[in-house]
Amino acid sequence: MNIPRILISIDLEELELTANNNGQEMSLEERQQISLDGLEKTITLLDKYQVRATFFITSSWAQAYPEVVRQLTRKHEVASHGAFDKEVLEQIIGNRLYGCRMGASIKPDYSSLRAAGYLYHSGGQQVRPMTIEGDCYEIYAESMPPLWITKLFLGRQPVISIRFHSWELSVHPISRATGPRLAERLDSVLGYLQRKGQFIPHIEWLQEQLTDE
Image 1 (cartoon, helix red, strand yellow):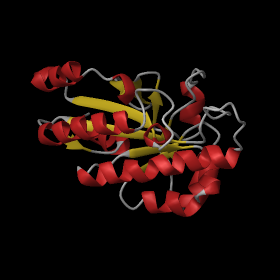
Image 2 (cartoon, helix red, strand yellow; image 1 turned 180 degrees about the horizontal axis):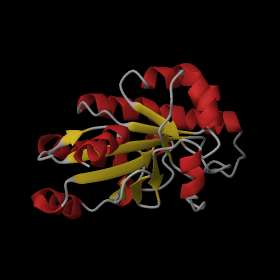
Image 3 (cartoon, one colour; image 1 turned 30 degrees about the horizontal axis):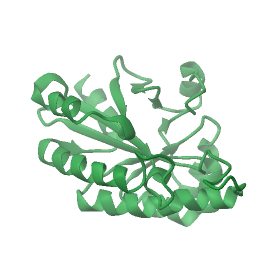
């Protein structure tokens, strides 16, 4: 594998915050809609740079927007954002899921995930296959240092993994680093990475590792 591989992943879930900037309570539907708004901008960016990505989706979000999830599978990989979301998501897309991403505060039980049929877990700043040794480091888009990314493509690292939430690109920025500012940064980084490597979903990267074995 001479061409560096670039793994882009997006969390599709209801916004974690339950109140808006004015302190007003937001319903589940409102928090899901913010994520959907951000997805539209996400897809625009991915299409611009011909990115095939992996979307980690919660079952509640998928049940709210099943047709959107099915449309994503035409070009991207769909994976589970939670160990117990697999069956619901598989019913919606009509196909098997291979990847899982647990919540940030939950320590993954790799034995249980393997028993549930997952082939890899992505989270905790690493993408970890269940079937082979090794992993790759994962970067949060909100805090990625450009110089560090540049060094990855000086022959030191054959794969890079970048993740973000769709709601981070919504019209309701949660912090100064999200919203239009993050969208502009991602635009620049994806353009650079497109010239340096190949965008592939997580499962294809794993399949390449198995082939190399």
